[in-house]
Amino acid sequence: MLACWPRCLYSAALYVLSPLIWRRVWREQALAHPRRARLGMIPRTARGTSADGLGERPVTWLHCASVGEVLTARPLIEALAAARPRHQLVVTTMTATGADRVQALADTLNGKGVGAIVSHHFVPLDFPGAARRFVARLAPVQAIFFETELWPNLLAACRRHGVPVAVVNGRLSPRAFARYMKIRPLMSAALADVDWLAAKSDEDAERYRTLGMADACTSVVGSLKFDVSASDEDVVDSERLHSWLGERPTWVAGSTHPGEDEQLLDAHRRLLETHPDALMILVPRHPQRFDDVAALCEAQGMTVARRAKNERPSRDTNVYLGDTMGELSTFYGAADVAFVGGSLVPIGGHNLLEPAVRGVPVVTGPSLENFSDVAATLREAGALIDVADAEALSKALGALIDDPADRARLGEAGRQVVAANRGALSRTLEGLERMIKAK
Image (cartoon, rainbow, N blue to C red; front, side, top):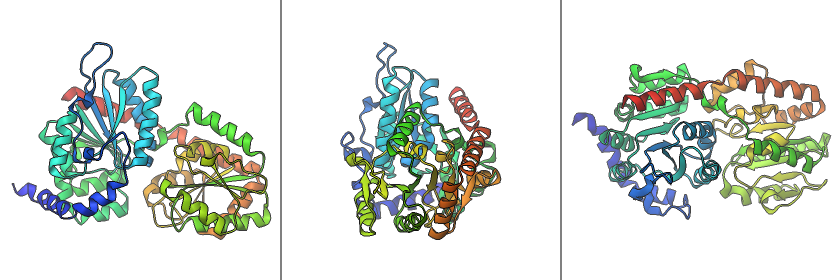
């Protein structure tokens, strides 16, 4: 009983804060998923029935927070679908943008007619009743939580229903670790419900151990981010877009945030002074900001073409706004240089390997705590350019535009880093299969 008190206090706090929590997730909605799913009210038939007469399909459940985690998890989702053809693979997300990415991936995989059926649900809010209801109705044979998605009541519900739990690509940034240490009794109790942690680095594994993860249940497998690859469709789309844009120097600012867009537009304005034909492809991280960013560009005197409106940049266009979902890899592949956002503001950075795998030179700001290990690996290989502010960014962009040989060197170095560090996917799959066999 004493071991349950942290979770009881946590649950009580959730109930007190439930009006605020519900308001926060109200906008994260998709037409295919009624809001009652947030309370675990999914159909018991969600497990599906195979069309080949094999009966009810076992469910493998994988949870990702949002679109970034879904993109990183894509190789794992594809591999699980191939390795478990008689299963249904249910991928849950917290956000609507994540749901959109899962649905697009599910449409692709299901359209091939081979492998597991892939589907999406919103993850329930972590109230005790909602968590128990969701796990009971889904009845998975395995639950896989991605990176830092540690929900105490969902983990407890899995334990109660005998569902083995894995945390894969497990990572804890210094900032997240400091937050979790403030509620260490709760996190220690939650981690006691995890059967296997596949940590991405020794540092992450040690942080998890400090929070209470059992050493015997912990493995260091490497980062799944290095197993990312561009799809054939992305490559073709990038080539088409590059041809469509012409030969003008082009750089991408990807996954940008409020307070960062202003700095990036300042950098582009400085770049235009020396390279008047340069084009910036600006891709905000969150779709609800698309209109605001378009207005910001125009307010700063930039001529804008919007991807979502099928507007083609003219020679006078300064900014091409990437206001669509799921095309960031396409934009990276069509550009000469890539700046990865969330790094000029205190966000912690985003995935530096998305442009690197496309052989595009990678530039980043100083806020990189979420990708410090990846950044260090790229930096050591001479495949990363660090800038402190808009002025430094504009100078770096100008130098790279003027030096095709250096761009090629940086791009190839990044591609080689990705190739040399692959392998986490196969190690993760092996561990997951051992769990299933041991059940």
